[in-house]
Image: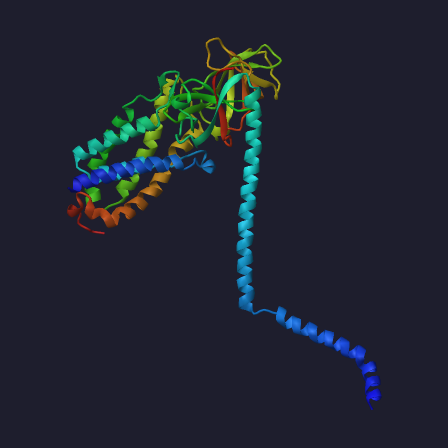
Length: 181
Length: 243
């Protein structure tokens, strides 16, 4: 039952994170960097859900990301459908490896992983785009657009962690968390 | 005795009248004076009224500017040679790497993919994914939106597209590539669509003005400023055919 609740809450969380991302404008002062919230939500879920549930959530999150940001011009798709699913599966596997830290109430691996995954997602998207457009172009604006969302994720992640803390009894693995801190 | 009293009254009359008037004035001053709490309440009501009037005024100004904008758009629609479908931008690009907007018209309104989107000022972009009641428009500032373009007053033709990285994709710059090395374009020269056969964009739509011209090893490149301020544009037209 807890796994089901966890998966449902994660699916709803990911969905609303997409909606929120759509509404939040690019930060002009930070060279057009944006809030990318979905990897942080997914990261939290992947660190508390069992492996099969994480896989299902990775498929859901990846598919939604693919569909939300499918950029098709002249019949050509820049980032192929399924690419984000592969990314979230890989990300989820790494997050599962750090589940022990979450169980022991340590929050910083979650924050670090959220920030790294957010920047990695954008970097890999850019690499895919460069492959498609047959030319690697890179400048400081590109770097800002990759690292600013990662930095924002590092700020958002502890807020999310603390926000979810009162409700952790609803999610799986809660019983296994010995509160050391 | 009474005559004496009458005389005295006559002498005192001007003073008495003045005194009466002063008394009346002092009395009315007393009536005009209000307690602090009354003044405070009145002040609060006046402040609220002021806010209300400010809001109404702002709203009316906004309506006036919208009215003016729509009137210009309507005039353009009537004199245009294209069949134009008015649309409104409902959301701006939410992705990091692409410059797109969503409009409130879809295939139910007759919109198809690869249809030009413009305003009375110039080209905005073209439709890509079309849903029932909305469509995604890729802006001309996106690197993947290629437009055959020519420079007015010259024979120069090239391919115009956005830059991959720019500070503000919505109001950014464009690159016009494959020009002659000796084109030597002057800043301010107008760039319009060339109208390639079987292409998406009809000929003669304004794209922007030349900002600078660079000579590269194999060709010339002009940096072009967009005619339409894409960061503030709200109302656009989709070209759905020719009249």
